[in-house]
Length: 289
Ligand SMILES: [Zn+2]
Image (cartoon, rainbow, N blue to C red):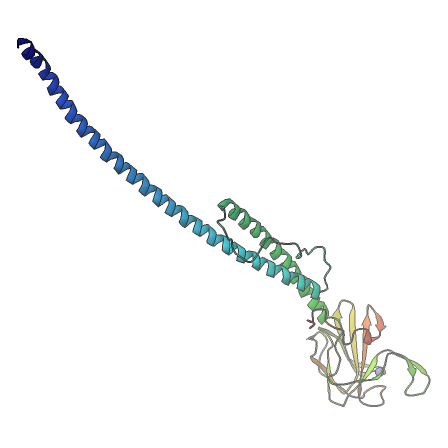
């Protein structure tokens, strides 16, 4: 009996400690589990947010990739235009490489595009646009100069709705029947019909010349001078700027002439040449088809 009591007495503090420990452990484990669950929920929540953010970012990248596809298609279109302009302008190839392929165009991506690939695509496209823009600028200035050149080449007719009555070169002299060298071509005209500048230029002579009667001459630059003779009236003075197709005189029959007409000459670098070399010359810019 004494042994049992002693044992119980000895065990009591242990029991108390055990009880305390037991309660503490229950409380501790319970609190730990609750904390873990909370953290797990937080992590899960953050993962969901990150996934959502990642999906949003990927959606934006995919949208940009689709835009990249559109821009590449636009680059292709610009290049095709450049090729066409180069052909129409009959310009030398070589400095123009519009035919160079410009990557894939058209349809957007069918799967997620890595951002690095998108960046690389955008950089490449930027370089392509810069190169195309440069080429188109050069092309524009070349075509512009070509247009200016065309306007200073005596390629139009000096009178509207007319026809040639006498050509350039050797012919029977209309006055004495012998051989004569006709230095221009004659266009049918009525007295008073407007005589037109065949190209842009500056009036370099306006007055009377032996045989030519009232004559006007236009310097077109590029070595070209044109002469319009036998006019009834001169409507321009020396130094005036005239545009192609503008009136420079009224047709007539002054000078050595058998009837009203326009005698038209073209001088190229000081030599008289056949105006037919220029007349009705097709503009290289004229679109065909
Ligand atoms: Zn003539």
